[in-house]
Amino acid sequence: MSKTTILIVDDHAMIRKGLRMAIESQSDLQVVGEAGTVHEAIGLAARLEPQIITLDLTMPGPSGVASVERLREAAPGARIIVLTMHDDPAYVRSAMAMGASGYVHKSAADTELISAIRAVARGRAFIDVGDAATLESILSPRTRATAKSPVDSLSDREREVLRQVARGYTNQQIADEIGLSVKTVESYRSRLMKKLGLKERADLVRLAMELGLI
Image 1: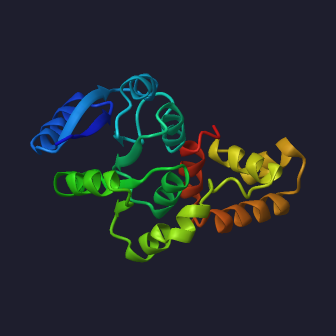
Image 2: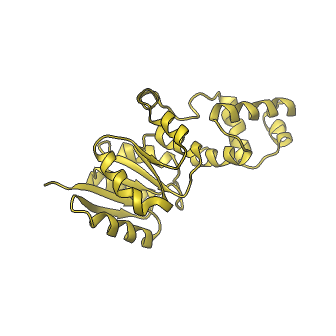
């Protein structure tokens, strides 16, 4: 019986070791490589052509949700399972929009990762973050078929405001920087929160960072 091949991507060696042990305890699964950076993972993914990639979203250097798309380009046949401490629905939506097939919170990895690998290997989506309503929306066939990055619908001016917010600029500083009134900047920020489905300013900053806008 052929085994499902997996590439583990995480910057912590001990976590990679634990994941490898858990995965290789299963007779139908095989770890073919490990990477500690996204750059290293891209090279290994292209060379090893694993069926599954487990990916930590938060690592030193270029990482985040955009790394899902970069790995998919390097290994088009691989399915990606995001394994992270983030349980914000915005991260789930962004990762799935970028092409991830699975999303598992690290606190549940010991019980859910093997199930996620097997489900994703069969062509199914698998998400474990505890928000049933959000997951139902994300997993619907229509939503997955038409999903795009959450920044695709933003205008150039909205992208610029998002970038400045993520850099920590105040409304006044943003207004001075791009030649708008403070009231208009406030309107843009409110519109961004609504379009991206976010509730707090901190969520807006985190999402901008994850999408590589800064």
